[in-house]
Image (cartoon, rainbow, N blue to C red; front, top):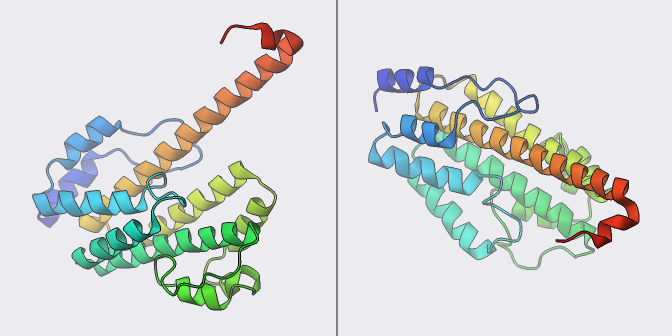
Length: 226
């Protein structure tokens, strides 16, 4: 796709200016897919691979690590953009450090296998397992807050901190990429973050409503039909 075509595509998409203030995504997934259909075959393929690799929900910590490592390596090797390769590395490093924090909280020792996770920091983390924040708090300034929220089982605050960290990383990249394939990738990843947060907010609202109803009904709640 030419620079002019990227310009036309990106200017046709509604602006995403906020994460936590968003109530809904600025464009539906169906409409977004229609706009992205103008990308060529290879661009669509790479976009799909990067989204699958980096999507908040599709890279769960309980996923098959061996398969994810293979997929991450294949994706990184096929993507020609250094900007996107660095973004992939950063996101995988985030996933690795968060997984390491969860392991430590569960009382696990340092991984014994050399290639135990993804990205560029897994060996450094393994060597610094007993050091606070794996000695990565300056590389990842959000790490101390994430560790504290995780330790205190503050799931909402933890989710917000991680989403905000990804959002800010995309912001840093977007200042250098305006009308390019990289800019299209950044837009899609931002859309995913807003979708994740608005869905998460809706889930919380439903849980809180159910709790309020249960509290109001008191002992009568157990007598209600399912």
